[in-house]
Length: 420
Image (cartoon, rainbow, N blue to C red; front, side, top):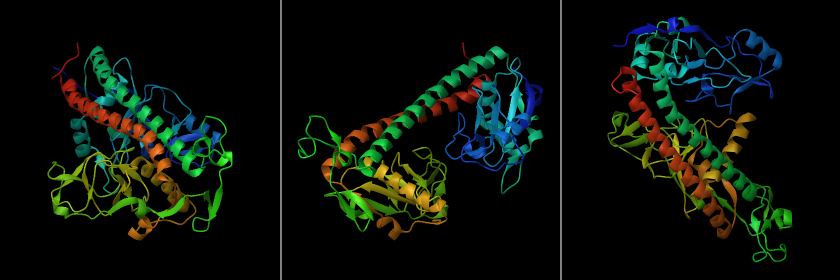
């Protein structure tokens, strides 16, 4: 029967990141906090960057993670993310992240990571070691008191290999999804922002002499100044409001008494709290739904952070923090990347001090855009919808892999399942 050992007895060091935050710079070395963590590493999308001098000072203070260090969220979303550093990089962390430096002769770093993900550990930590209500956190010294099942190192390694294989496949799918989305965004920008949508000799014989398609604007396509948009757009394009091309439903929150986490009723999203990279996490349900979004609808946050969006994986109910959007003409992929473009505008206005606390129905319905002809839309949508469909397939597979991993995790740890 497995016995237990305290974390402090199998770690060379238990520490955390910097307890002060240097002044940020535009280009420099990344400095991560708990908000930049995800399941397998850091997301640098919105992290802070610091100067070389500040970076070197923090390296000397041991705020730089090393290979095999186990990083753990200790403030706010404590224990939500735990991952192992697999590659040493020029990066430092803030004190909201704990560093567990394992003695690898006694404990496998990946085994430790998965053990800390088990529900029993999270429940024990929440009861015994979490302090604070506004910002729950784990005091650093208490990490050392967490008890670990002390399996032989070869058993730890076998368990880590099985669970890591599932996470590795999830990570591969995530990378594929990111590349597919980047391709779609680039195509949208090229066609509908730079106006370099492809034209042929058949459609524009006056501009195209060869048999290969060329970009409209760079080939001399006529541009016309539009006083509404205050910029030039291709000749023949119309100015439309969002409500003319899209079905828009503003959310309405059901009775709070109907909320549950037992899958009673229909999936419910109040706002962007459960948003993921593209698809939200199904956490809350309601037995008294009010306003609905259909599968594949865009879910748009209309309250801070305004413009954040996900896609509905399933039919669901939406609360007052969201709106659902889909194309009236079947060009849903086009609408997805159009709303991404609108998000850039909201972010820019927020950046210059014009903060949106919320996006009203009138604000959303009257968003104006340059709208091309259906032939261009159909060609774009046919291409990009293939990317979007693959992203959805990969995401569903990831959900299944994560469920398998989470089902296996406790049984591998307590010995109900063994690895030959």
